[in-house]
Length: 332
Image 1 (tube, rainbow, N blue to C red):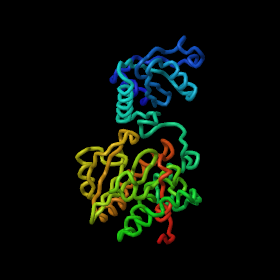
Image 2: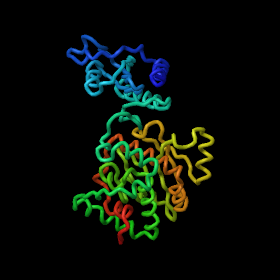
Image 3: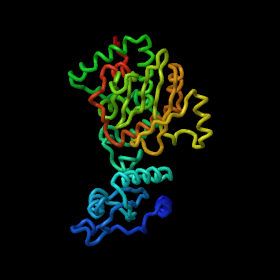
Image 4: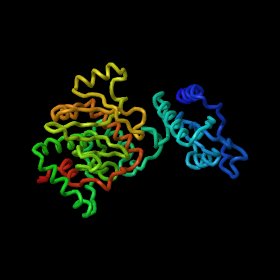
């Protein structure tokens, strides 16, 4: 299998020791009597599909491997990498290896540092995998046919953010900004009514930055942010670099022709394929969100983030702002 061979070459190049065939007997206690043990460093779990899991062990990897064996039944082999250093350095090296694997086209099952992973996701329980695939190919139409019931939030939470939404409505450009959020949610957010608050949230005038007008969070990452820049606005959004031209020069010109420039904000949760994009002016934002290539890159990124787990910012979700963007009802 080509993917398995790719993993072997990659692991050799990055300094992992020769692979040891997985033995289900390692699941019995004491694990150290059979499988690898006594490691302070990193380990690579290789699966029959060609995907991998990269982990760290600060004392003994035996227990970690036993836990993985109890979770997954398709482990093929294990490779070790002794590493002397602090726990912080171990974590940093783990992150570097996860990103390096992704850049080489290897599927990783890590959730913390990788953007994509194999296996069941909590998202699958409300949006099945086939529907996720269908949505990614045609977000607007699939979203339009979704009959999910809007989420009901506690009355106290709705009341807590009413004043901030009123502040937004007082802006002369509020309709334009809400329309931008509307477009972003309907074209890039997987089944936004069904996943609202659970897998994405939008805050209104978050207190963490006085310049921010609104901020959309997916999983633990801010994926779309509008800033007040006086007479104009600025928008930041993160997308999947794999959906853009692969050549850096071609990608730069691709973005420039659309009035978009490359930013340098980076989140660990976003994995190796994230790219930060910036547009300045309301008109430039409207054009970017109308571009199917840009929204496809954002949609792919948001879906992969959702598959990593629920949204961390549900408690600051502004229901009034979400409703204004997702519905056709009057909001003033």
